Length: 170
Ligand SMILES: [Fe+2]
Ligand SMILES: [Fe+2]
Image (cartoon, rainbow, N blue to C red; front, top):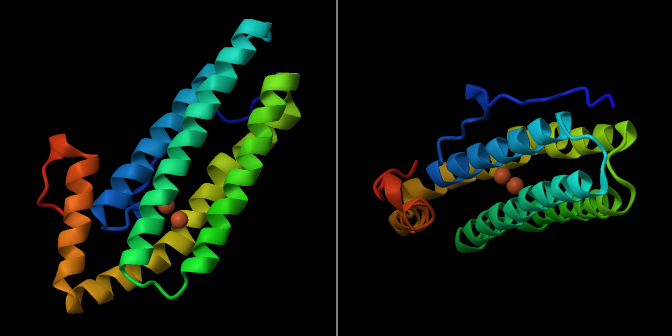
């Protein structure tokens, strides 16, 4: 089975400077890599296909969590492009849900691997570079005016990543 890609690397240009988003994006990359590694060594027995689908589902669920964090931030910051950004999240989740269902019912083909790579890597990286970075620019401008927004981002980071402390924000 040709899977084309077996890992994806976090690069510094994906760093936004908003800690909570960067930490979640990094975690997402870790989960993509865990999935890709599993996919690259999975022979297609029903059990391993089902294990692989569940690893993919874990990644899908993390994306749901991450998107809901971003959406909470956008609401709190009265972000003017909220709807457009949310639409992109919904687009991704719709496709990833379809891929998960296909994986469960038909196994992991080379064609499905290409689709998975497109949405979970290419699409996602482009979304960070363009759409998330636009939000980040707004958050940086807005938090210069609204110190409560900084506090909100800091608390959110602290509650999601308690071990790494509560003080880092932007
Ligand atoms: Fe994001
Ligand atoms: Fe986003």
